[in-house]
Length: 116
Image (cartoon, rainbow, N blue to C red; front, side, top):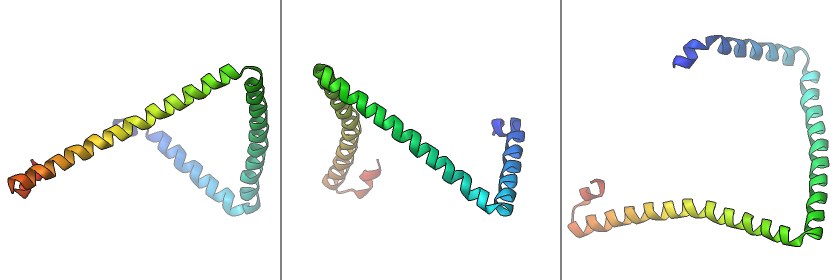
């Protein structure tokens, strides 16, 4: 809350810009549609060029240095395995704790033991 009270003027500027954008969109709807469409077109062209260049570069590296490519593949697989293993292990331990509470509650014959 301290940040908002100290930087209230940023909220005012954001609101004024939103009003200005709304007025432009109302009075020039063609321009409002044309700008995002042109921006997407430029983005698609640039992204396509970079994708093509990166795929050519990757193919060249694989053909010239297959040992480097195989090492990179092993690293990617290892990182993926580690990153997916951590949440899976956390979930399994949570399920294990929950099941042990249920078993303990039914063994004690006290359903309120679930919440202890």
